Image (cartoon, rainbow, N blue to C red; front, side, top):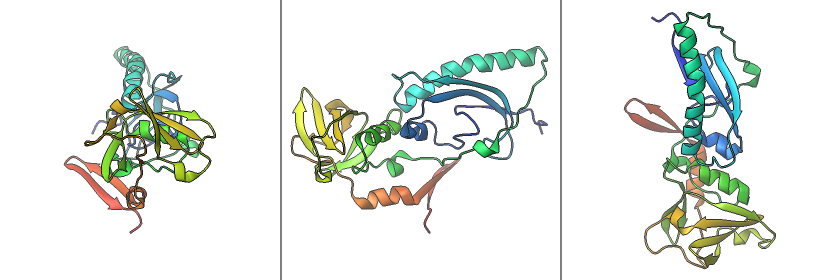
Length: 237
C-alpha cells in the first residue's frame, strides 16, 4: 500500500538482537552496545534494509531496562530528527541490506513466567538476571519461607567465603537495611527496599530458593503477544 515507505526505529544493533525481548536479553548478556537504527519495514522480523545505523555505548550507570530505554530514546531522537529533515529536503534515501551472517533472534519474555532466579548461577549472572526483569517490570522472582518474593536490584562482591553450593541463597548477614546473600563465588548485597514480599520480611538464616518446577517451566515456555493480550505455548510439546 505504501510502496516500501514504512520505516521503523529499532533499539538494537541490527541484524543482532532481533525480536521483542527489549533490553532484557542484552542486560542478561552484559552487552552495553547501543545503536540508533531506522530500517525499512518488511514482512520479516526486523530484517528490512537499514537507513540510519549509528553506534553508541550505554554508560555504566545505566542498569535497568527503563534506564536503557530512556537513554536510548534520547539518543535515537537525534538520528530520527536528521532522518525527518532529510525527507523534508527530498534527499535520496540509501537502503543498506542487513548482513544475515551476523543476525541473531531472541523471543519475547514475560516476567511472571520467565523471571525466576536460578540460585546455582554465579553472582554476576544473578545480578544481570535480576536487573533484566527490574523496572519497569515487577522484578525477578524467587521464594522464601514458602512465599513468592520479587527482587528489583542487587550488587555482587566476589570472594571465597562460601566454598560450597549449599550456601547459595542463604541470608547470612543483615546490616542497615541490607541483606547479604551467599552465592557462587561471593556475596549478593540486596537492599531490603528492593525486595517485595508479604510479611515477614526476610531475616538472617532465611534462604532464597526457586523450586525446579518454576525454572523448568520458564525454559520450556514461549510467549507470543497479540492485540488482545499474550498467549503461552510449551516449546517442548
